[in-house]
Image (cartoon, rainbow, N blue to C red; front, side):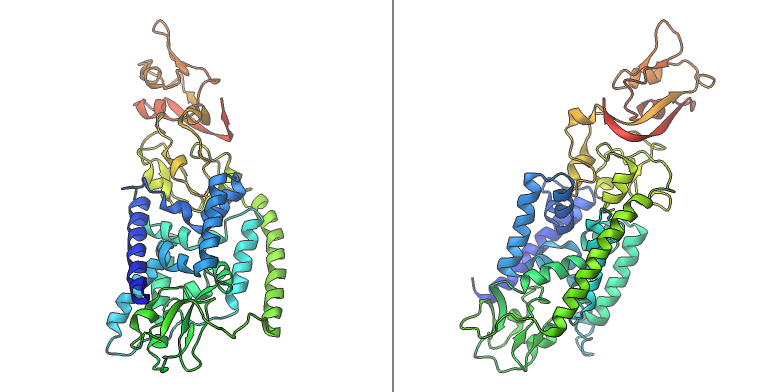
Length: 430
């Protein structure tokens, strides 16, 4: 495939994946589990349940980056594609006014990554979910406050300095950049290059020095714009022939790497302490089946909100000030007995992938009948999917606590407010 055709192919693939991502996050169409190949959810899945599929997907993304560079950032990451769209609009505005500064490559990103990943590997997502591109895209697409704020800030950043988030703040991009640095396939300039500067001017990552004919492939997101715009076809993508450039670490780089590693180690310890302390003052909540308990779920949920829009009864509530992860709200519905959609769509394993049979036996809460309010209509007994409410010979209904799964169907059908649903400490399969 010719170099300029690669650019069109890359745009086509990015468009397809972005469309699938939007349809999936909005709950319109999600048979193609595109979020299962997002970097942070994959790592979370590997840590949470170490499934073979998760490991294979993780190896796939790492292998893809090693072979082809940061193609993930320009093709697979939906938040990266959002920035590309914003950058395209910005470029149309700046056509006759000159263009803003391009993003550069600053050491700060290593320390941001060390903090985010350190706390994450310590056991808590409470830091990384506010800067991870997958989580931010989900939050923004579902109109969560954090996502909207992040989207506004990043669009402003794109206007001022293009892909600065990808190159200098994104913890995923930093890790993939380090892998990309040793990738055999790179962007490079051949002997026909006349140093016209078109590639450098149009590079959103600020990784090209046209005078020295050098491309910083750690920062390069492989958008291939330089290849498409080069008037001499001098920009190439592949294995650079007879390259005299060898990988070497300078003293400054060694110091930065050492400091980042020390910070990473400290953040792992902080994450271990944080995951135990962060839930001490939060309220009890009802969680989606497969979530386990509030401590585990709060420290695993990425707040991507994929489960919210894919829940057919729309009872999954966004994170709020009292509980900073998604949870169930029975005020307008109940958890359908024949549905385990949230378990299917969660890519991170925060909601464990459980079968429908397991879900139907999982206690997520507990019902209680208020005898002084009950009118003895019997509707609750008729609708209970596990027959935990018994009504015999016209007597008031009685709850068999050993069978109740806390789905909320009884509460939803009771028109007199005679049934309450209480949170439980830990979900169990009956």
